[in-house]
Length: 339
Image (cartoon, rainbow, N blue to C red):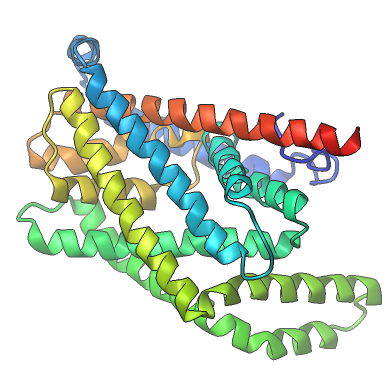
């Protein structure tokens, strides 16, 4: 098992618990159902022809854009991390790459823990603080995707049913996330009072829980600085715009034309869909999203599946390469420290 820190093992993370087994079971069942729906009636010979006739220049450009957005995501995360201490750009990039690698190849979004441990080990920042910034970043992305999908749906005559109906509940969750980021640090006194008032709680455990709460709230509080928040939001806009452009370029490489508004809708659907329980690499969910969003705009299921298979493959290439280099860099430096 690939980990970012020797301490992340099955023994000290509780092993394969019943709860994890249920989660994995739900994820695999959901993937199987969505794959059956998405791949039923696909003309695989046509998929093969589209892939065989792909223009490598366009695919290389899409891969390059994806690599740039991966770097920008690490730079954006670094804005939050540096609220508590120095984090180099390379440390943030390698940890982010390894984290995305983990999310693509490991179950249960283990990549968030991977990048948390890597940054904490390199910088000395508290793990609870680093994890809080990583999770807050995810919440911010979900909010951005809700805004994107809502704006695009207002301009399109054709609206994919599930995404149009899902935008409202996701918007509610997004607003709840904004409220949490804004209010939770101001409610620290309440959390402290609750923990201190729990009867029969061992003193040592109470101190640990209070410390984790304080570090986590500091991670959320990183958004409360106006300059830091402005930089984060600006990079978020650039990142999602580049992702939409990469979608258009990748489709062009297969001889398909995805209009930019539909590209924004597609990346919003993929991002929101990834919040569901999923297998590594979001297999099943991404196929369902691509088919359900692209077919109302004149794409056949075959074209939609061909596109998403190639897009996933390209993502595996650049995230796999950068993530593997991130792990190697971590191990090399770790051996240097202990030599």
